[in-house]
Length: 278
Image (cartoon, rainbow, N blue to C red; front, side, top):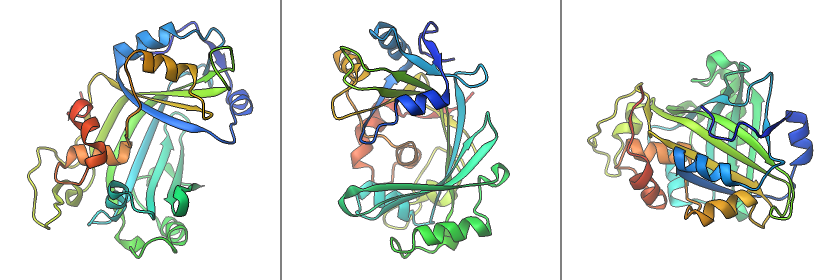
């Protein structure tokens, strides 16, 4: 169930992209108790706030499958802040039966590039020959890892609500707000669960193929200009600060405590004591 106020008006996808297509933006992520988040959103002085609505629906199911090598080249590059970071994933929009294969890279000057191609939703948990060719080309100058070594390591799922916050006296620029609920993480690889830095087998209480969740938590992300949005201001006023969180990386580290996770350690300790999903 969505936690945004039901009285907020609706906005179409075309209108949202037209009004909040920011050339330069700052993304801030928060992980929050769902009930507390609902109370904060209800207090926002945002009478003109609008919720993305498509075919009468305001909340949409997302499914992402991340690929990595058995020795977790992609994860470790993210954990240590390597200059040549990359992520390979399929991103599926389950309500519209659409799927894409995405390659996200980060090189010099921390400039991030995300590219994607349409992909068969039936193949979202594997790399087809066409998919491998696309990934190999995208990563050619970035890593020595072979695309043939990439395997699905984790699936993330959530339901997303997207909100448009128009410019106002308290909101410096048109901005976006996304709220992700019903968060789940499913390990897909024994090597990811059992990986240790010394090459041994680490203990784990999690099982491949079982879906886990962080009960009662939501992830809020604001997208605005350099000045904080009205949503940021109200979150800060409530004592909530931006955190380092990546659904892929923090999920991997929560499922396998042997993985290096210094930058996400506090987030995992406070919010990601994962339990089997109902």
